[in-house]
Length: 379
Image (cartoon, rainbow, N blue to C red; front, side, top):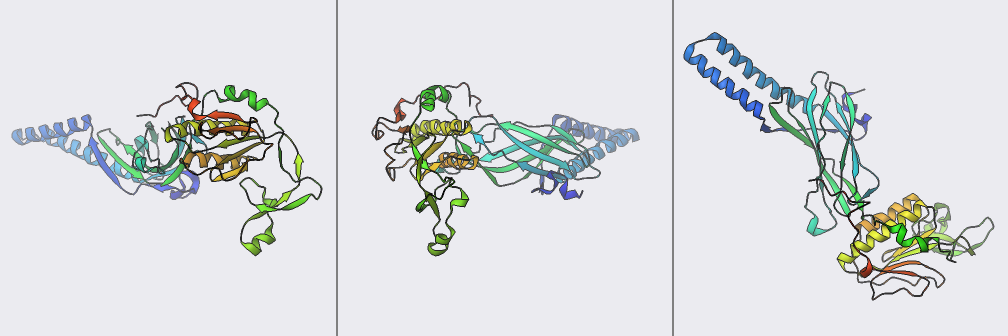
């Protein structure tokens, strides 16, 4: 195993390039003051023992600084970010830490993660949302370990991992020296979960809804071509039309009666404050229905209608909700008349029929600080 593969076994291993003395601890000031007093006393008295003790103290100060600097520069770091992050919920970031040195141990180590974001909103683009606790550890030469840092993001959006700070107080705890790495990696934070969503929507989730959707049966029931939509299987793609026209087309199969499906329609012609509540409600509904393997179709301005058939499509929908903003554009098309499900909008834009369960955003009460998402960001 090479030195560069100590942490994470070669997976985007990061190395500290520069270190800096942050501050002197109280014990360090005491040692320096003692060395100064003994040195002055030795000059006045000519006592060789005082000279010897002063030399030992000064040598210990130099050794402490060199060991701290060399041990930090021998650190190797790899960051594993979570794939599913919800706002105001505890999030775990895993760090693979390794000591590539064959001589110098890393003592009194501290790790701190700094985030920048949300990047998609100009008013918050330069706000740092650190909020991760410190983790102390001791790394012997050649040793590796995994460190889990817990924290919470205050709101939805795209956050960038600005840097990871690593600090050490050296072998004697006299001086605090720190270095940093800048992974420059991003994570998308989904809207906050809506507490009690299952209780509110339980009746409509169990309610049978007669809906038709596209399906490829075992027989040759080809109907035509249509534009590709997120969630369509790859084997439906009509490659000859892609080569001729340059646009992605999929085969459309004959409409057949199948299992009931629920639509979730979000009309984003909403005020920003109300939109946050609507996004929280819709994202929680999509997640609950997908986990229960229920057929669900999601539609909003600029997205869909998309059939949430797989985990990847679910995460794509949640990512869109995490980054979306209010709009003044209406929904691009009309829903099929036999469709039904949840219609989330302002009171000025009601659903097209009584088959829909209307969720006016004005009636959505902000979630209480209990259940999911009750942990505030760490200071």
